[in-house]
Length: 250
Ligand code: G
Ligand code: G
Ligand code: G
Ligand code: MN
Ligand code: NA
Image 1 (cartoon, rainbow, N blue to C red):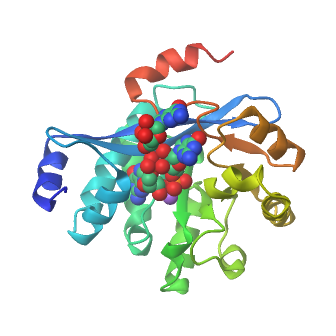
Image 2 (cartoon, rainbow, N blue to C red):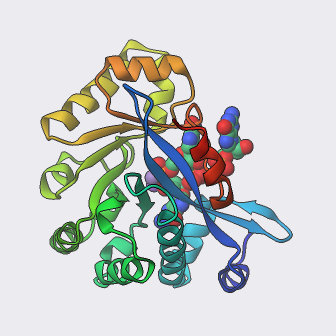
């Protein structure tokens, strides 16, 4: 298993890098942006999942350094692709409680010449169970910088409609598990429909994750979902593949 010492070395050696997964408008198939997803290739163990190394970084006081590193790289890559494309970036629950988060983001953006109007920060609901007052003030600081906020993995974990009401979200990301089950039962299709309806009634953009088939994409479109992300549109790719990917988009 990955050890904190390996993670420290990996950070120094820049072994952890962002990959970029396309996000598209369901109605037209037009690319709207990318989600940055961290990837670690350990020199001996090979790929280590972010589900392993993000918690490891949190437990060992390394999440701040890792996030700064990733932000710097993501913003630099982002300045080399068309500026109408948005960039979604995941913030770990612990980081969302960090008072210096907005400061960090704004200085990294300045350094790279990246406009924060393009940034969508994705947070999960587990980030919001502690101190709601603090979450609200951090969220407001980010909004003041022009950043958009997405509630990620919606419908899993500690779902509370209060989070949607209390924080200035722009986007609701429907967890891939719902998309997967949607074709199997009427109940799960109705749940997806209800989430989309809820999102729209709160003026949020709805994004479906884990879209793998055209059947799923068509069903989501019929249910009124705005945006899709998943292997149907493309897997996460390294920065070096972005130019080739973009040249396939018309
Ligand atoms: O990319 P998937 O391929 O395996 O990602 C697994 C989990 O790791 C997801 O919940 C995703 O949000 C999270 N994740 C991926 N990249 C990052 C990152 O850069 N920062 C944080 N905090 N989480 C990430
Ligand atoms: O938790 P979060 O939504 O941030 O992370 C997105 C996760 O979904 C990542 O682990 C990413 O690799 C994964 N993912 C991306 N496309 C697909 C897909 O089409 N199907 C499934 N099952 N997972 C996907
Ligand atoms: O690298 P990532 O975490 O996105 O991949 C998670 C798992 O999903 C891995 O087993 C990977 O091989 C697989 N995967 C990644 N992209 C695709 C894809 O486009 N199609 C399919 N079917 N599997 C994929
Ligand atoms: Mn995400
Ligand atoms: Na996530």
